[in-house]
Length: 245
Image (tube, rainbow, N blue to C red; front, side, top):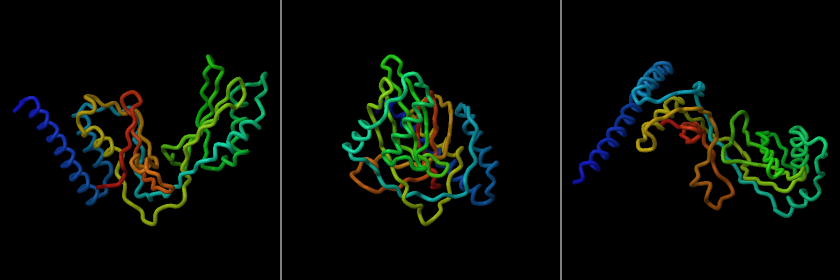
């Protein structure tokens, strides 16, 4: 048997056992005392041993959350094109960020897409092509609904494109589920093995997230679950379920 291959298998097995035993200990602490500080201290010691850098503040752990039923919401291409052709170009002498955002907001209003779930995200400018893109994110309350995007594209002050991948919140699930501490999500990410030799955690945010396996199916309705969105190692992103195992 190839010794190097066997050694790698043993290392991975030990890492998985570490995560499993750590998870059992954490759940025991949570079940007995709900002492979040004790849990975080225990996890912090493990992360220190692994050389994991935490470069962001850890958010508070909510006690429990509900899932969210969503409906995929698409527009007819012909209707969008009519609104693009009818849009008024921005004034050539006043093409600043405020003007572009106002024009994009007006366009969304004409398409009946300016609901409370559509929140301005950013404006990006490509001066080489005289192009400006105004983008929006989907929010349910104060939580982002991931995998949703909407953008209005301008070329020389004229709307020339519109992209939208959107999910409409329908209703919350009937039951609340206990969620993991964000530190436990970091422990899960860094204990998977094989992905990176070093982890630098840049941001961790609570979001609603739809499994890509479900999203790729030809369905009209889906379920978004709470998840921790972890940004690490120069902008890489992973979603870790908040549901306690």
